Length: 101
Image (cartoon, rainbow, N blue to C red; front, side, top):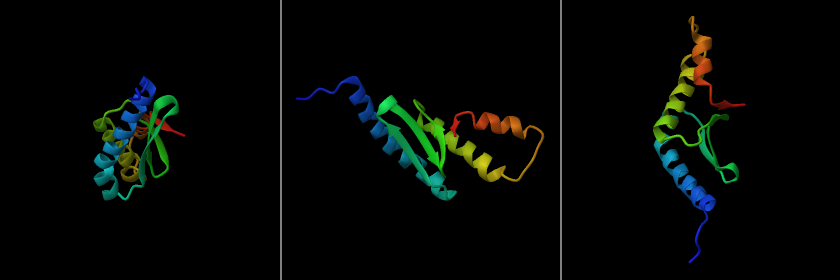
């Protein structure tokens, strides 16, 4: 029997989580016609949500928190795209705090 070390075991869990996340976000992303993926990397054990090419850092997030990131993306990129209000810059800055360039 081969025993996995902690990093191998953690990455195995991340791959399982990836499938769960993709299943959970599929209805939302398809409803808004968003191309999506959830990327897990073995090196550094990072998790990244990818929405229409926009990377959002989601390491150690719950599925609930990942769904909240999608709602923020929809709000910022679809709903607010051409709207303006007084606190828009502050709101978008908060929504985009984990977005990666």
